[in-house]
Image 1 (cartoon, rainbow, N blue to C red):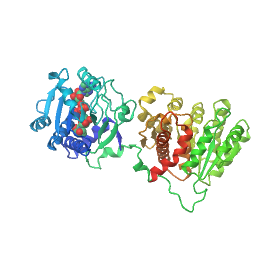
Image 2: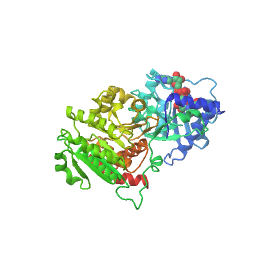
Image 3: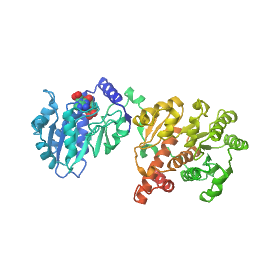
Image 4: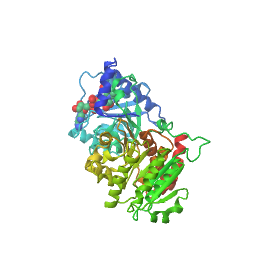
Length: 520
Ligand SMILES: NC(=O)C1=CN([C@@H]2O[C@H](COP(=O)(O)OP(=O)(O)OC[C@H]3O[C@@H](n4cnc5c(N)ncnc54)[C@H](O)[C@@H]3O)[C@@H](O)[C@H]2O)[C@@H](O)CC1
């Protein structure tokens, strides 16, 4: 499903109009399809619907849907917040079919609205669509506030977006209508996948306007929801006669006295994602305490204070030129002058020993914090790097305040992927993945099951595990990894029975089932 801005939606409508499809025709398509979707559900026993109608085309869509439902034997009521314009054919068609209408000014105490809603299966929210500009006018605010106060017996369905939401930023009025379901017209709007917008949409269903596929604007929109259906073709095929070399090596550089488990989680996740071999480059203490947790790994003691440590790493980089490797730098590495100097030298020497490296690097956790301490860090990195910051790490890398990043996650991730010329995974609820070539994917998952220490280490391991198996495109590997990770978290929550008790180890244990779901 595509994700678009309000301007892009307006451009789609404009180009569709120029191609010969009238605005009215588009609205008729939207309204009829809304009705069809409602009719396809069997749970509406009263076959009664009440819509809140605004003055714009969002209300127009809703009126058409109501009229279609009357034709199918439904009872339909339109409660108008304000008077629509005098020559509104949509309203007269509805009334001609015996649709009931009342205006707010004639029902100021909401008696009629409450009565209608008592017998309705559905409240259809056609008050405001992409034309909503906050703050709400006082009459809209009063109506929405009243709707909040009603004890709900009906399903609330929003047309295009919940009313009271800014469709670009996701900002919501305090009385924004909380939908159980949103029928997105043509595409999801960016605001609907931003916080707090996504809290109000409920289940998302898409409504296509059946527009010509060759509209020029479609070529420019490269933002999509990450969905199972579009990903399952991307998972690497496993040759039956392959050996461990066929499925590649993941090299993990991380760990410290303080963070013993982080690189272990990355290594375990990489194996679960299917890589052939994991090389762990960790301090002695990490190896001594944790080797039994991951007996399949090969261990190299890395004491980053020792000048010889860099030689060990570079030997691997040189060896990796001939084989499929993915390097993860950072989990649990710690932060300090020694680590900063190690990071600086590491990338300097990578450029020297392998200047045109085709190897994949994933920089995660402390690796990102250490990078942020180096001037001009994007120029120091090899060509193929994925950066996996959470908002705090993104803030250190970009010098933007966390609040600003969170307010505008999609746009900022897109902008900085281009600026840094790297694939960027902005973690958190509704993780965003952007590529410098303009592609963006968003995972529509928000779950506190994933918000645990070590969860990010697991993610970098999964992405590395897929890269080592030969996915050539970093953006695709990142989207695949994010999908598997997010779904593994949800599966772990189901298995365990609640979100509180899920740990990063539980997420690793559910990678198996998430992959099975993907390839099934
Ligand atoms: N070609 C078209 O015209 C299509 C339109 N579509 C529908 O039309 C919608 C967009 O229609 P519009 O551009 O008319 O916009 P809206 O239907 O969102 O409404 C805009 C109206 O609401 C008022 N308004 C905006 N912010 C307000 C606030 N804070 N408080 C009170 N009133 C406010 C504006 O003054 C304007 O009268 C889409 O969301 C979609 O539902 C779809 O059917 C697709 C095709």
